[in-house]
Image: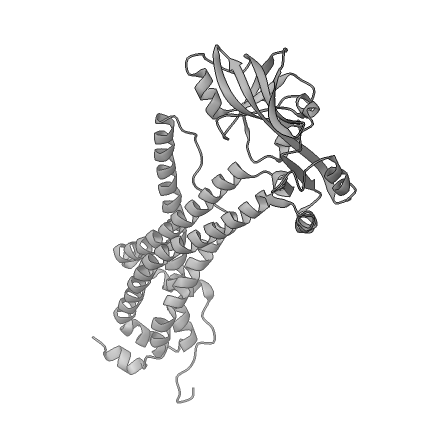
Length: 406
């Protein structure tokens, strides 16, 4: 044997893990508190970020659908100069990137239903209009294209049905006030429709005086379109069609623009929420560094013995890094469990309050699968990085100094 210490060629990985995790049994209380500290930090991050994702999903589901994201609402700022009419529809209908064009005709009037009269703003639309509209049908259905039927808003339903029970199925008598010009003089023509209209459904939200009926029922009034909804084939064509229409002088709005703005706001919100969680994580990391440093001091003599017997520095370093990584991993897993439990308790509390106040039940939390995996990986990396410096210090200890340490 040479005068230098004989090196152990290779320590088994299973033995490394066994030695690394020994402190989990010997110092159970301290290890548990360290894991708990890391877990609470990641539970905070998980809770706050999943809340941000949940609120984002709730909002986007309320304002958009797949078809609504492919639609453009076209308006004219001056109907007398630049009217929205059949000529405009014919001009853009030849574009093969447009799959549907739905005109909207607006006219004011009065509706009599359940022995009550209401001033209304009627919107003449096609049946397919509601597939691309951001407003969802809450109850019933949309009117068929040639049916004497109307759709009202939930606000109007509450007003009408306050003392009259369910409004859907009731009949309404409608009178229109149609603007007209006779010999250069602007006036209003009263059009009293003799046939009653049946209320076939309600929308979730909208202006309280709005009603929706088939466009065929108001197309004979020779009014310009108040708006036109244009649906394109895919999202790549949306901006091109939008620029083409604005180039003609018309105003264009899109649900997709609203969604993009909402996503930007929620991304900022999620970053802010993440910072709160990271602040808690920093405190936990300091505690973990302290734990690993104490573990190093307690095992100084043990390290000296291992080095005397020829265990390599790299294996000594691996011992501490495996222990730190295991603590980080367990902290991440426990953080997910605690975050999920806390989020469900919070969600149930909010749902209970919403139901008690007559609100709508929604899920405030959303857990993307990639985010769950990222939490566990990040927690393990935090443990690995946190254990690097104590492990390097342990690996560089002189065995004789380590054996004399008290």
